[in-house]
Image (cartoon, rainbow, N blue to C red):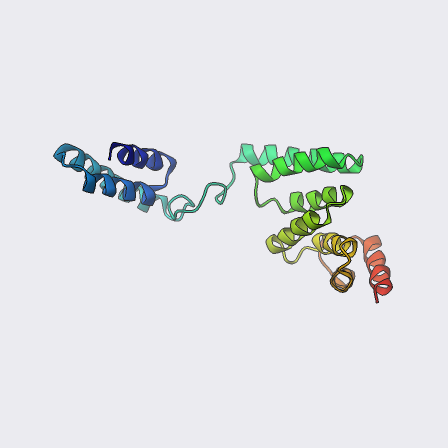
Length: 196
């Protein structure tokens, strides 16, 4: 009972008011002590007010950590790790690139460009299935983006999934997205043709 009461307090501090209320309600049901029951009720009342003030924050609606907005300092660290990862790729240092890009994604889980870059690092390490997973997730985050199409085509071609690779090369060649590179458009057309 005491553990549940304290867990409720900890959850409230973190902003998980709905979960905190559940713990205090459970503690209230388990105790015979009127003072603890009253204290739990007071906490529940305060938490409901805070819950209303928090609105739709990730914690207030019970979402896990990492699913909400990223603090500016954390975002800046993630960007630095991403840029370092890209630098490693340009030097063909794929293992360190993979490490720093994974670090960037731990800090900012929805950083699309880091998934694309990590896909490239995985291709450099011949980890084609992992590369495909990174490119697929990047496409989920930004369906209008072209870069993941080309990367996914490369990964699928390496995995022997030629029909899917051809389709992706063709999609890249037709794309008008801002991140399309003209030299890769032509290369994509040629690669798609060779896979016919």
